[in-house]
Length: 191
Image (cartoon, rainbow, N blue to C red; front, side, top):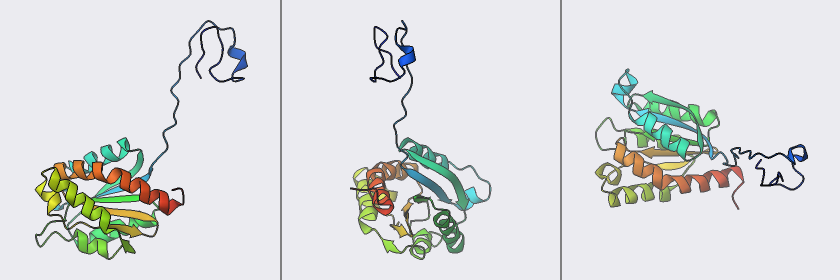
């Protein structure tokens, strides 16, 4: 609550016991709605075996800045079953958004899209195309060549991002408003 000069409350009738005080009280009003709950799945053999994870913290930071509560960042090997299990666990756990990072390229170990396709009820090709397009424009070759998918599993938005910092930063910037719209529609809150 803010007290105006003369001791009057900024809100009529609010905090009448403060009227007459010669003080300025400032508080932080927290009006920022939570965008939803999210989980990050890092697909990387080295990270899954205890190596340093540089992408999970980056995605977590960007999600937090976008207003999401991040339940966890988990690392799995580039293995279809492990990836699928991590995605399914997130969906069953009721998160609004699952972002996987890595495994979207062309090497034999890049199996994230294959695992994701087994989890999705419906694909959202527009999101995948937007991520690739913005990546190309931003000069991220990884993003432009990504085979990553996006779609809905139950009431969860699932999105694959390439495993490079540039692709993650650009992808998260592109994904923000799209994810908000999808999550709003899935929860029935979109107008």
